[in-house]
Amino acid sequence: MGTGTPGDSPAGRLSDEDEQRLQELATRVYALARSGDAESLAAYLNAGLPANLTNERGDTLIMLASYHGHAAAVRVLLAHGADPDRLNDRGQTPLAGAVFKAEDEVVRLLIEAGADPHAGHPCALDAAQMFGRADYLTLLGRPPGGLRPQTSDPGTF
Image (cartoon, rainbow, N blue to C red; front, side):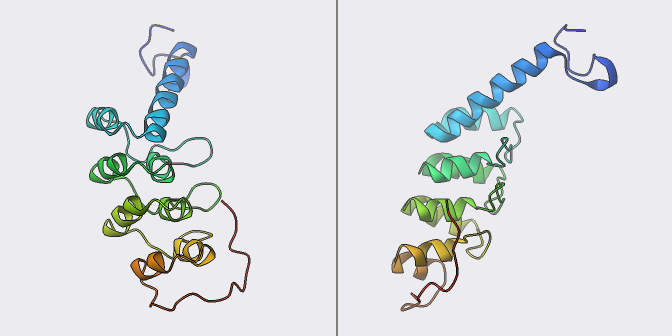
């Protein structure tokens, strides 16, 4: 036990040492997504890192990259199969996060990848509505003049 080989501890559990290494790796990878280091993310993904890796708040790598406006990282994650509609624990999608942060290039990439503007709460359409972004509403498929008074709480980010 503690030799560094996953699964050699009782019942296939990681040793404390392996658990620590795994936590350090996850922390490093989430930081890469937040900072937009597309090249390093690609290397980890090419080595087998799951594209839909999720942190303790349900945020995927693509959620973090999208929210922080890193189009190159989003592009890499999408190319490796990241789910653009995966909800975090607050019911938010990468697309709604990108709309909330007004990350134009990321919004376009996610829409081109098939992200659902109706997914989540608030959904991307609600976020665009909330911030008066007629350009996003058009891009997301709501007809021009689609701004309407808010009738319900769109949620918070």
